[in-house]
Image (cartoon, rainbow, N blue to C red; front, side, top):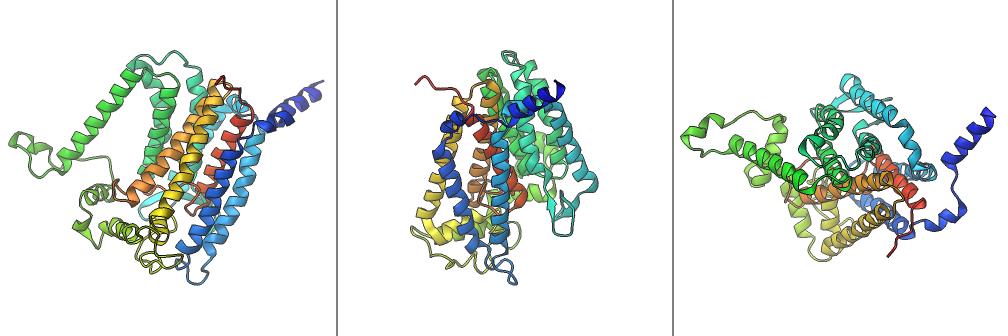
Length: 401
């Protein structure tokens, strides 16, 4: 009898009713594969001169990450997403252990410790997977607090739940991923029923405090009674502070930190309407544009494919995100809706910040463009998120409109 119960339990985890396959959002799948195909096309030109000894190295490895990522997505789509609720604290604890392992045993590069390497060339970036673990556990955490998010004091415990992994990631330091956690937290809190006026007011107040702190730190023309605050310390690394300064005036440091933004702006601006053509760019092909196969891959699109190319890519992302919202609306329960909301919030923030920093309207934070930028951990994390969305989609309820 115990064996039968175990078999039935496992069958319940992996079983997908044939009729539920008709619920599959084919439009969401189509635009996902279009974005993955676009990634290979863009990287075939963006990375051609990055590694001269093997010009197609990043395209080949990206293809491997995509294929293995598809396997991850399929496995997670087949598993009933509600089963993850039974392992929420195990997942949360594993997430913290993984992030602690980065700080204790991770490899440092460019002033940050973000990777755990198993061999000299193979490693993972745990902060990428931490976002998925956070969404799964925080969704269940909020489900159990449904209707109990009406006052400011009710926001403290959910914030502390997210704050612990956030601080571990900030310690690496990884400001970009820390901000992604903030975006996920805000999106999921609103959908979970947090009082919009009190929660929104709290967020606005926090933003004002941060803005005042930055102004006091950087302002060179303060009243006498405020000069004590000039140069006040901030919990940021020097290079992160420099990025904020350069964001305001990239030309002030054309050969240093401002180089990234200026080269990106020149690349996108020189593309014009139709672009310079496939592999006909200058900033990217001559390696003037740094990190153009990862963080600044959108700049390559603007230079070689022009305004038409960037608008087409943004249109693909728009439909992809709208289908994600549609999946959230169709979720059969609050847990599925919160998982979908967290994933859509994550993707939306990544896209807005990456496009914003390459266009010079946001500071450089080192956030990759999802499903497009080269990177194994990021691709696996993105495909895991897509698998969870599909799991919610396969088990949805019918909309009444």
